[in-house]
Length: 336
Ligand code: KG4
Ligand code: ZN
Image (cartoon, rainbow, N blue to C red; front, side, top):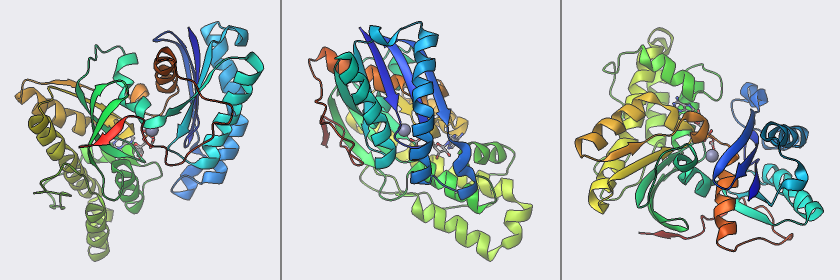
């Protein structure tokens, strides 16, 4: 079974070819044009997808050595995401499905992220706990089987990546700032100032980053020299508080719900400090920590093709009337 996956939910245009569960090719193009605006401009993202998508699909097909007539199905991100951006991918997927008379499947972007570790080559058997930390989402999901998910916790305000980006931009870095915040924080003194850890002391398993973001903004307003002279220290302190706000509820959820495996995904999963802390805490509890290579953690089309292949095996397919849904809920997700 050969599946084409298409991902256009935000500012990455991506296509991938999968033979059964194995990746034959994957192409991703990130739109750096948003940098100068300090965030993703939806209309510009849609236009970039229109320009990039066809050549990227052609490239994915040719590096897999597959002709378009050999495709058995097309899987495409249906949501969540920017509606205009989603529609570009969905229109392309439906056109290919119609022309080739093959099934089209609308996939939830977050469900793709949850399973990233499987096609990254890790031996991942449910049940496991998944921490999804990206620029748009921060959630803790108990995965019991494909299509059977429990929402254990989520952010009450900003996503973790959004907090890294906003604080980075506030400290003079370019968007997206997450990776550069980490670079600078590595050389900073994390004991310079204590920023608040969101949701500390809660009974639930939620996350919050807006208080931390405001605290950094207030600190830099009151101490304008600090950001100039101590930028690395300020960023190290921010990163420490942000990492704590992710680690504490996650480890508590592992203990309370009896999960022995933790998987991370999403762009913020690239953060080495976060990986190290989770690895340490999970190790102390004799658990297994799985952190896929970063190319599988960030937005990609392999995860979409993989989820499409799973759904197809379960006998599912969508009609050509399938459309984008900016708030598409994860199928099979229930609250604890
Ligand atoms: O999953 P992703 O590629 O896109 C979506 O948001 O869906 O995640 C991008 C986010 C951005 O906010 C970026 O700043 C953040 O991941 N990020 C990081 C790091 N690398 C990327 N945040 C913290 N540390 C990093 N090393
Ligand atoms: Zn994503």
